[in-house]
Image (cartoon, rainbow, N blue to C red; front, side, top):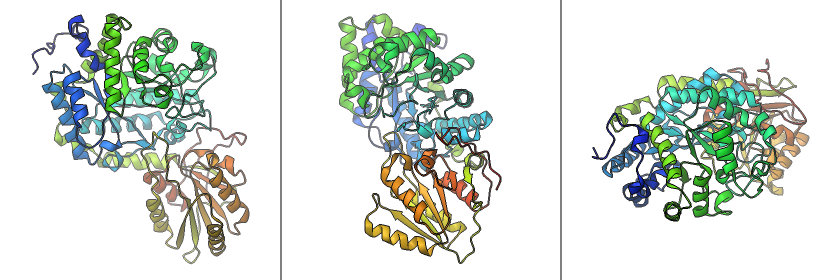
Length: 557
């Protein structure tokens, strides 16, 4: 063991470095990512020569469960050999649903909005605990979840189904349940994105969003889940949003991440949080294109944050470290402020992490175990929501001779936060398992005239059209195709919305509308079971569809 590690009786506060090595310890206040399935020279340099505090993993780092375990074990071994007092934080965005980095190597559970449709705190706790246990087995000790944003803006391009819903009380209730589940698994969790990213139509990965609301409005809505969790359970960590709140800061160009009024004034003083506060990635355009990495790093620490996330580029990670040291040397960042940040980080590590308690290889047997797979099936079955069935088409009653036409828009892009790509082949195979006489057509968008004629002929030969929609309400080409089919199809049409639930807004005349809240294979399988009568819909829509205000009630079929 490194000789300078604290004794078992030494507190985390006592272990905070004095001025002599404070400058060397500043790397603890950085969390960094890297490319590839093996530790890169860049990440090893940060660990061994700069005392890096944490590592974040993405899908680019994942090949198999065994490989992830070897990767995290190697990272920790190199940190231990370099004299780190505590193990590295190794974090990941395993929100489940559409944001999940580990793919099929772990049990995939529903994302937040699907769980909002279930509206069961007990189910959310069980899923968070199962997710936490599997992450721990892989050597990942921190999940950047749960999302506590309230999705009260249908045009939001980056939160959407990552939110439990639009009701602040429900989001608070289910967010609290998630934190409790992660704690039962012994995993560090992180509330995000403070003070709320729901009511914006701008993706902070691409630009700086602005929310104009004052504190009174925030306390009625956006802050409710954060305040509830902090009051009733406490939080290990809070991640800030790169969003401007000019009513609080007086500056429409100032992201919350670097705003003292929000970090120190609102989070620390008004809500009483004294735990670890971290930034979202500073390479997102909301900060990188406005302040730059170096200035954003220093100003975030000045504002009261304790951990800086720079997820991608080594040169930017080094630039952030240099900026910290320069600010300390020049007196811009005081030793007291930096020691405060280090103290919060070390208290968190002391509570959860130990060199003696790193996971062993046999823990991998927890992955995708029968209990977790049963929980997966139950939760997806409970999430599927039937919003409209006015013609009584569901469950489908097709004879073997009747042709079903499955129409799927070709959607190849995803937002920058998603890892889930659309499982078209799995969707087709699942539908054909229930009804072999199925023709599938992938539609290029915008729809060329030749393809339109071919689709028209296919519709004329079908007895039922099953149309998949993927955020059609945000996609003019898809919306036009949806409305054309609804108007022209001579046979019944069933719409299956496999992402955000707002596609009925793009085509209000749809008579049959089923929701999955995510384009994942377990969700597709659960939806097909409802379509063909193998199970019943149980979900309730956790958002409203203005001006429809329609909600599914686990409708009787």
